[in-house]
Structures are given as structure tokens and as C-alpha cells.
Image (tube, rainbow, N blue to C red):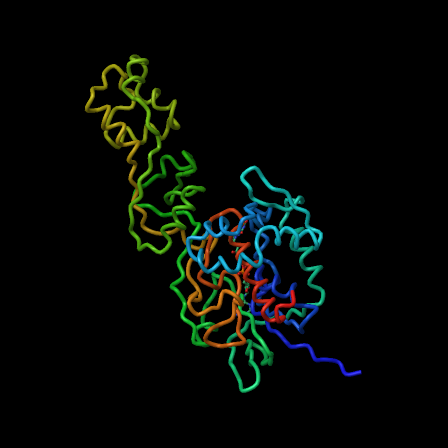
Length: 374
Ligand SMILES: Cc1cc2nc3c(=O)[nH]c(=O)nc-3n(C[C@H](O)[C@H](O)[C@H](O)COP(=O)(O)OP(=O)(O)OC[C@H]3O[C@@H](n4cnc5c(N)ncnc54)[C@H](O)[C@@H]3O)c2cc1C
């Protein structure tokens, strides 16, 4: 009986995206993953070691709204594979999950190490080669993959080298790369917040270098394409009726009165910047000073001069989406080459959205390679 030869697929990069693509294809094709470090090592720090691998929004039209870059592109991708499919896949490989109050999905084990172990166990039909791919060339009949040690030939190539990498392979194939910029990252500021380092208000954490915390991560994502320096404003005190508070507490120091609304050290920091003596009694604060105080807290302006180096969760930028078919993740420039994961110009907020991008784009690429048989 004649046996049909399986097509050979090279997957470059064994992070979440490349590994997921391999998982889908390993029994249908001859799959080889080139990984310069060790497979799935990049999943270990995710979710603070707990691996927030998806988000419990099951309507893909809503899910796409969590991606400042790639919303439109992901529409078609998520229509094929989204949050529920991810949970099902992980269930299948023995990773049971739960939904946290904020809708983030975690493994019941709360351990990315355990997720990695299950995932690697599932990848038993995938061949891993620990070499660095230097270039990919299209030949007359296939693709030549050149590493730091050898040359190999494959029918198809999937590029999943992530966002923190060198894009030479991609550029040599003729693709354009949108300038990579850090996203979901702490921000360096012109102002010196060392004296209130560690203080946190409304999800903004002051640090020695500037600001961090969930609200700042979101801002860094929304402004990832903006040039430094840029200014941002916070209202740290809401719309309080300060005059009524002053009337109610005439003998309290202004510092103590404000510390009912913000941390005391922050109240002192702001008052000294106005400048107003933090120990001034409330009954001595006149209308003009009251307005200055309110304005200082409600329009707290910060000048952002950069991102904290090498600390971003995700890269904004990557392979230009105009050059990829979202229905197949295939290159429009070099047919037979596919992309998935963070290497493309897609990035989402915190919450499991960046891993979801990996799973979904990897699935779509694998499905196209498998001739829509998944
Ligand atoms: C601290 C931290 C916490 C995070 N937490 C979460 C979270 O909880 N939820 C979430 O959704 N996202 C999270 N992310 C983001 C998420 O980890 C990434 O979006 C995801 O890892 C991207 O996967 P990828 O496979 O596209 O790329 P990568 O994970 O970067 O993998 C690419 C792989 O390719 C290899 N490689 C690169 N170039 C070559 C080459 N030339 N030859 C061979 N191999 C190569 C690299 O060694 C790497 O293993 C977090 C990121 C960080 C840094």
C-alpha cells in the first residue's frame, strides 16, 4: 500500500504561539520546531507565574476590543478560534482552569510550570531543534532554513519568533516591520517620585524611576505608538467637595484631612509642591488656596520621558498586518510562509489577551497548513 508523504513544516520559535501551532499540526505533518533556548520557557513568568492564558469574554466581537493594535485583523481570526476554544484545548491536554472575579482565566494549579509540563507532554510528536535560525529562503521547490549550525529544507514555514526578537529573518523575506515599541510597561518620568516610591493610588504605583501599576500599564499600551516625552493627567481625588470637608474639620491639618482620600505621604508630597504647609489648619485655607489644592490633585500632570528598559510585557509593532492574510495567517508576500503570535503587529491589554493572540493566530495558521482540516 502506498503511503502518502506528510508535508514538512518548520516552526521558528517554540514559545506559546509556535508550540500551539505545533500541537495542532504534529499528527498531520512532519513538524520541526527551531527554538534557540528551551521550548515554552517564555510561558513561565506569565501571570506572575500563574499563567493567565485567556479571558472569559466569549463573544469574539467583544474580545477584539482589548487590542489597541490588531482589533480589525483579529475579527476574522477570533471568529475561528477564541476564548472558549482555548479553554477546551487546555482541558484536553489536562489543564483544568477557573475564571477569576476579573474574568481572567488561570489554570486550577495556578502554575505556569505545570501548564508548560502538560503542554510539553502533549507535544511528543513534535521534533525540537535547539538552534538559532538565521534566515529563511524560498527555493524553486521548497524553503531553505539556515541555522547557526545547519541547513534544512521544508515545504512550509511558520514564523513565531515573538516580539522581543530581531526581525532580520522577516525583513530578509521582504516583509515590512512596524517599529517595535514597548507596551504594558512601567514609565519613566521627568518628575522625581523617589520620596513616595511604593505609594499606590487608583492603580498607579509611584516608583524610584517613575510610575507603574495596572493603570500605567494600560496607558503605556494606549500610548505605545506616541513619541516620548508626552504628558498625562490623573485625577487622584475624584470630585470631592473640599469646602464642605474644610468646614467640617476646621482644626484638622490639611494633610490629615486629605489623607482621608489619598495616602498621607502623597497628600504631603502634593501640598509641598504647590507649595502649602501640610500642617496648615483647615480653617486657615482660603478659597484661592482650596482651588489650588483641588487642582493639584485633580489635574496631577506627569511628563513621561520613556519606558522602564527591558521590562515590557509585550511589544507593540512587528510584521505589518497589511502583508498577512487574516483568514490563513499566510504571508501575502511569500506564499508558504505563515506568522503567528507576538511577532505580528498585534498587542493587547493585560488579562490573557496576548496569549490569546498566540493561540488564535497559531490555530488559524495551522488550520490553513492542514488544508482546513482541523
Ligand atoms: C513577565 C511577563 C508576563 C506575561 N504574562 C502574561 C499573561 O499572564 N497573559 C498573557 O496573555 N500574556 C502574558 N505575557 C505576554 C506573553 O507571554 C507573550 O505575548 C507571549 O509569550 C508571546 O508568545 P510568542 O510565542 O509569540 O513569542 P515568545 O514567547 O517570545 O516566543 C518566541 C520564541 O522564539 C524563540 N526565537 C526567537 N528568535 C529565534 C530564532 N531566530 N531561532 C530560533 N528560535 C527563536 C525565542 O527563544 C522564544 O522562545 C507576559 C509577558 C511577560 C514578559
